[in-house]
Image 1 (cartoon, rainbow, N blue to C red):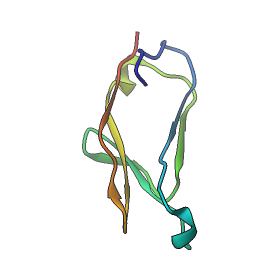
Image 2 (image 1 turned 180 degrees about the horizontal axis):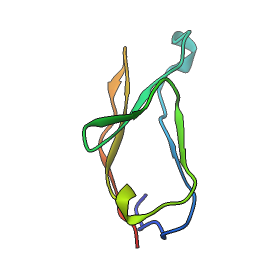
Image 3 (image 1 turned 90 degrees about the horizontal axis):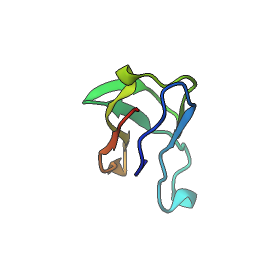
Length: 75
């Protein structure tokens, strides 16, 4: 997100992959600060955001590579 996320809010992250029709098994892995946090999905939901969720997030698809990293800041 461009703006900070408020502590306690719900945050949904989407991994958008172009040319979906060419990918029979749509899946991606989500990372935070270089650590794998969720596998084989294109959406990740953090139900109650806290300051511990601050960091760089990105997703990686086995064939398409990884997305740019996005900084999530929590206020």
